[in-house]
Image 1 (tube, rainbow, N blue to C red):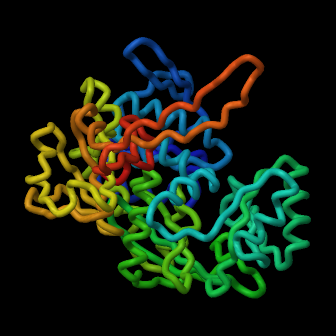
Image 2: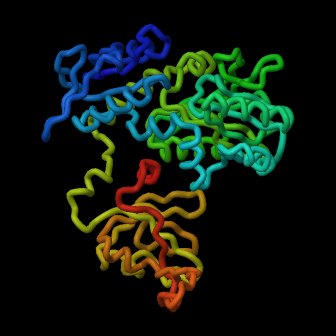
Image 3: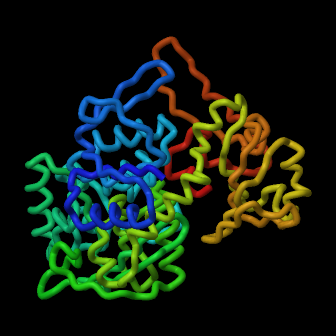
Length: 422
């Protein structure tokens, strides 16, 4: 395998370990400075130049994109994707995870624990927002901070208000999060590769420091993750669109709460704590994917006019409830069920004999017209119409409503976090 590692820091521990692991396994590998690329676009022929020379052929790319070059770095990764080169992490996945607000928004629609979070801009909204997340103390975070930088614990409402106003005056956008007291000074880092957690550690802050990041002096210890934490970590990485990720979770009384999903997780702390060859596991995974790669199904579907992927929700009263997938007639309507989600359990390629239950979510591929017929018409809201002089306006009659059958919640060309659960 010919592998390119995109990194502006060839001497850092993680880059050196990944390069060494690739060489040890007999692969060809080069560390390429992400900022030295040029992106050329022409009809049917996307190209990359490195240091003004046409880039040679690579089979795989491992992006290590720092926060300071997110925009250009993801553009380079996106170009590799257009050139049909396997990328360990997609450009969309990196973008999704880099912005804390965006990542929390994406995770919030899924059944995954996250700390109560709010985002405000108007000064008048600051105090109500703090109260909505449970009041002081609260954690204040810059949207693109890394390694614990830009994370502040405000012990009182007045202090929180002053910090937020100061940051806003400096044109900084911030999140306000509930402080999970039972996890003060501790969190869990799970290292996810593909669909499994390969290593996990607990990070413990030292002294009066509440941030447990290794770069802030936090102590690390290897742990065996509870299955609930493993499932949460893998799902969070998949929802973000990441194949290689570090998922940071708080150990709350009601279960794991995801704080952040890191697209370029460091190796030094977790390899030191666990003694595992995580760099080697990353390289082995990439080599396997080069031979049998995952596909971006959204791009493939553009060649199939009238077909797409959507998620069908079966509410109470749906006519499909109580029937097996075979009895539902979906296949006769040219609709294939790819996965069935029941609660937090996802069943891939469910058997035709499986009986459908209320609140099931079916990820389906098929003819769009047939799937639209399964969506109940929604009653339009009456709009108040102001009466003008000499003009009489009658309210629009509500549209007839069919019996509820299935509710769709994803579009054909949906965002990255919707396709990553395939």
